[in-house]
Image (tube, rainbow, N blue to C red):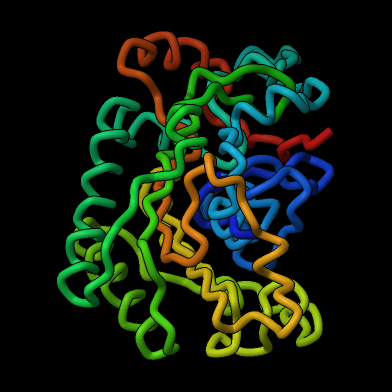
Length: 316
């Protein structure tokens, strides 16, 4: 999904280890992942989790670790391929030396905004959405979770082939409302507003997690709290932007919880974490943005790999 990173943790940020365990973007480290679209790094990345696991988990209270930062902790084995050069000689390409990352082409990395511009653009996009949502739906906004603010927004990235990347993973702190729309029609209106603002910036349309990657009924009830969107405690989705950028959104509506309060207990966050118990969250991220100062070095290191098909990302 973008690498953004995915049970109230997916859309708002979060990440999953190569073995599938969610880390960050959740209220607590052991919070289970719920369903949704693929995105650790967002729709354009090698998504290994669902948006809700990425954004909804954000609402849970554990500080977000950028997908790139996680990858450095679980670095795969180096990848080497052999190609035939123009002179007919065989040459080994050590993909650990590639300055980019799997799932994002070199051209996309160079054509996209710089890290500096991407941060400004992401903040502007989310701010515009907040203003439009307040105007159209009356929702008001709390401060982003303190745990995420403390973590920062920019993280180092691993290239997916056993080496570090010059790109940076971006996960802005999650914006959250002070309440959540109750009726499904009201949630749909809020999603429509998100889509309208995204379209003005040249982004794609909002896609709900269960539309992108449906679950069996019993799994949907277990992970999201209901068999339909109108019944779910958790509803998440993703908007894909250009050049590996993404925006995840998620609703947490405890009025749909069961009599035992399963989801209220599952996602109870420490008060100091700064998460609203019920909210609509918005989280912007990017799979890999290049700092302006690193562009020349990136082009130099990427040159030997030009024209070669990138091997699959290595997860372990």
